[in-house]
Amino acid sequence: MSLDSLVLTPPLSGDNFSGSKPTIHDEKNIATPATERERDGKTRKTWASGLRWRILNFAPSWFSVNMGTGIVSILLKNLPYQFKHLDVIANAIFALNVVLFITFLVVSIIRYTVWPTVWYELIHHPTQSLYIGTFPMGLTTIINMIVFTCVPAFGKDFATVAWVLWWITAAISIGIGIIMPFVVHTRHKTSFKEILGVWFLPIVTNVVASASGGVVAAVLPPAHARVTLVVSYMMWGVGVPCAFFLMPLYYARLAIYKLPPKTVIVSVFLPVGPCGQGAFGLLQMASVLRTLSRSPGGGGLDAGGQYSAEEIQMMANAVYAVSIIVAFVLWGVGFFWLCNAIMAIFEVMCRQKVPFNMGWWGFTFPVGVFATATTSLGRELDSTALNIAGTFISLCVVVSWGFVATKTVILRWEGSL
Image (cartoon, rainbow, N blue to C red):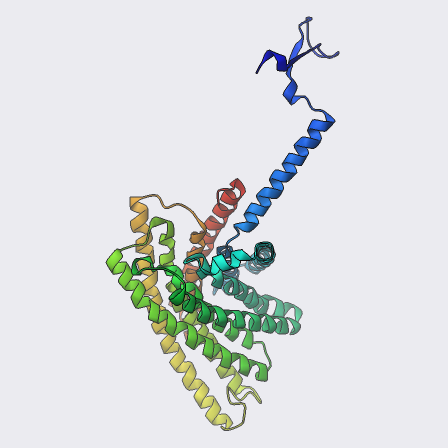
């Protein structure tokens, strides 16, 4: 500070100052109307540029927050062992998820409208493009909660809302599940070593949408439910087998090149997703199909009256029985990947510090849908052991969600995420 920049001013009257020494002020810090306006203008420009930067760098992976938050609300809503006000907590998390989804959707629309070339760059990015599937999967959690919460509380009109949203999600999921693997085959430059768990994301969108179709079909009229089930079974066939095509590649990658880097180590949980959601979806669709076959004029999947009521019920019961067996097999495969992921996380954490990033949201949803599969098997088989196991896994997901959500808010506020 130079002497020329200092101004001498006498002490103000009323100050507790005993003497005639002047007070020293820095002229650069003296507030004037002009400097205040300039400072406010700079603040607004800084805030605006910071906001533009955040919107420009808003990645699709943020919709994984909806997936994690949504599955927590679903788990709490359908927990086998309920307690007072748990329903209120589930509905509050559901409302939070809706607000987050709308916010993320608006930001994404602004991003691709203001910077349309970003979409092209996103599609050709070997990792970020795979997170596009988190958008429809995040929406399915909201659709399911509309069925679980809004339909019983406010009537069948919300069943129509859920059905319309489901068709939108189904169309997007089919597009992503078919187009994105083709983009990987033709546009992305990758190697065998770079195969990661995020490769499951575009494929599992169809599995998630098919399971949601089974949930929505449960509250629809028979004709609408029949169409929804047919499309859901088709989407299940697109998603689950393709996920099993990828699992041997991913297993071989782990065997040859060992665990992924610490920055993406949480992605080892992603193979659990298609197993858990595939099992839950199969059970849900089979349950709705059996109910539909028993309802007057339901007819199962037979819309033309080709089979008698007894034959329709017999086929529905057969599908239901086979679905339980297949769901158990899927649950077993998911259990293997879950144990492998837990051991991998501990292996890496014992050796080095794992940095927090948005990828941490990648384990809440896969483990959450594994919990829904567990509780669904417990409900269908009236198994206390499975109900207890499902409750334990669900509570673990809730606790981990609380940790990841808190960490995300703190780091986002600090600007380091």
